[in-house]
Image 1 (tube, rainbow, N blue to C red):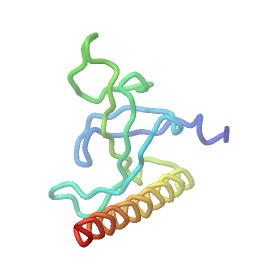
Image 2 (spheres, helix red, strand yellow):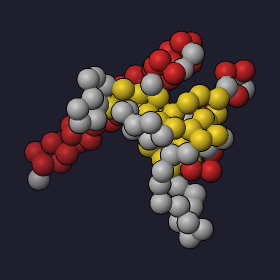
Image 3 (tube, rainbow, N blue to C red):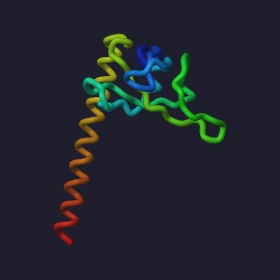
Image 4 (tube, rainbow, N blue to C red):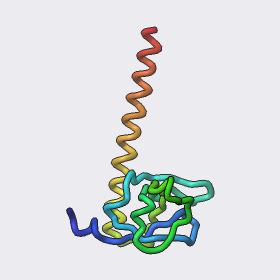
Length: 117
């Protein structure tokens, strides 16, 4: 495990919200680029388990019957160490490329199936 993975980073429930929490870098999964309504550009988002919030609070419905569950969180560049943000951005770009490739293959497969039917 790299030393950066133990680092705590601040995440937000929305790009323009004030409610935030700290999570370990290693606990952020499925990092991706997303541009919410009214956001000025694409931002980094990822998922964390509600049980992985170390400090702070991101509002969500959570009770014993539904927990734990994933929360979509935003990582703002100005609130993260530059090298960590660069790593998250790299992970998001890799995930985007992989998703685009999978989407193209699925589309190509469905076109082939329709053409042979």
